[in-house]
Structures are given as C-alpha cells and as structure tokens.
Image 1 (tube, rainbow, N blue to C red):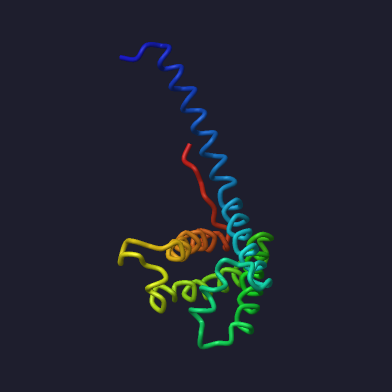
Image 2: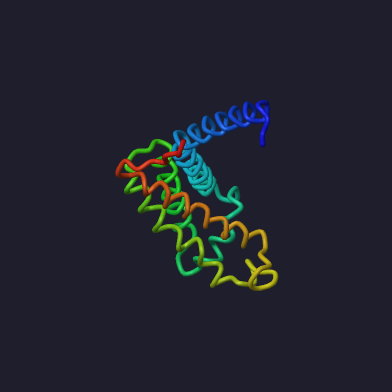
Length: 158
C-alpha cells in the first residue's frame, strides 16, 4: 500500500509525463520534417562543390555508367529541392515522391561496391556502409511524414 507521499509524487510524475508526451506529439512531426530537410539540403548543397562532399567518391564509383560531372550536380539539385520542400513544408507530396525515388539509388553501393561497404558481410559495415544504412531512418521519417499529408498527426493518450 502506497503512502500519501508516494501517491502525490506519482501523481506529479504522471502529470509531467503527460505534459512531455503531449509536447512531443504536438511538435515531433514538424521537428522530424525540418530535421530531415536540413540533412537533405546540407548534403545536397555540398555536392555542388567538387571535393567537398564526403559522399562524392562513393557516388562517382557507384554511378560509373553516367558521367559524374553531369550526374552529381543533378543529384545535388535533387537533394537540395527535397531539403527545401521538407524545411518549408511546401509541396510535400512532390517532395516525398522525390525522396522515395532517390532512396533506392542510395542503396546501390550495397550491391555494386560490396568491398567498399562491408568489412565482414553481412554485419560488419564500413563507415560508407553505415552512411548508407542510416538511410533506413530517412525512409522511416519519410513514411511518417507521408502519413500527415492529408492532415494526419500524432496524438498522445493522456
């Protein structure tokens, strides 16, 4: 049996938990959208400047069948547009379409350059491999955002 002090503490902790959960539900999707946007914008802008993006060599070696001097600026623009769309929240359907069309290409090195992405297949990833696998989080974030384009939102249970 709890004494009165424990019940009061638990009541206050419960209220704090409700407040935090409500704040997360009310702001989480927007923070996710802007955060993903910053990532895409940042990575995209870096690709406009040869030698600056740490992913440039990986892209050059993966998409060897297209002139990288043509492809990389197109990819840079593509990612920058995705970033701007996410940051502003404008044209979300088009933005998410561009995001999901781009994601399969980011996985190509897993198949085309296994020696670059795996130290020990299937679990030992190189830094490049980890860079690629983190895209699963970007895809998950895109799915969550896609669930909001018709007005969906997170709702916390109070």
